[in-house]
Image (cartoon, rainbow, N blue to C red; front, top):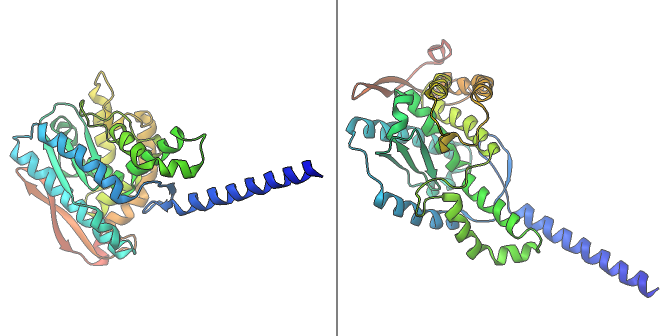
Length: 311
């Protein structure tokens, strides 16, 4: 009877612990905008923003800003247009309180690597080396839409949360949460990957990258940039034949597989593009003009008949 009582107590404790773990994990669950995917976030937006801001400031204090005035203007123009479309989407879909988490910055730095990266809070850096591949505003929108998507989908917070669980996986979740402050600070150095080397050292997961492809296409389409520009952009990247894989695309599938995936995503993105920023087919659309001899956008309201008539 004593053994039976002991085992019954153990079972009760396990059930209680499991219920507590389930409750904590449920409280830490969030949904990604547009895709609806559930994600585990053990760190708050304020924690991630605080951790990332220091790394970003250190990087920008030593980075060599581009002297290409036209290129810098283009990066800022396209970036701000996409950021504005994203904020409009958030406000119109019950997520307006999230807008305060973004203090958008779009910087072009003098680095020949075909690369770009995003920090939480909307801090985005583009390297000059990717501009020959983007060529124009719509090609650049593919890159910036992808990076903005990482920020909005909280992929950095998800990485830190995932690593916290891996590092403390054998311990109770209460201990994970107690160790979160010091643990997340150390992990942020890996996740944000700026530190001494100023390069991404812990890439986003393949799932995160594929999700950013999808969300990025839609965000650029919402801003009025043709998402079909993504396919020739990645074809140019594939034809570039660089000896080392740029970190911007390090966890993506092969070029052929990726382009095929983009083709599958295109009908959804085109509904937003032809719908002037909404899937319903009405609203404000963006036609292209020029900045510094390179195509960019200009806003005009079109009728539903014009929008549905194609571009």
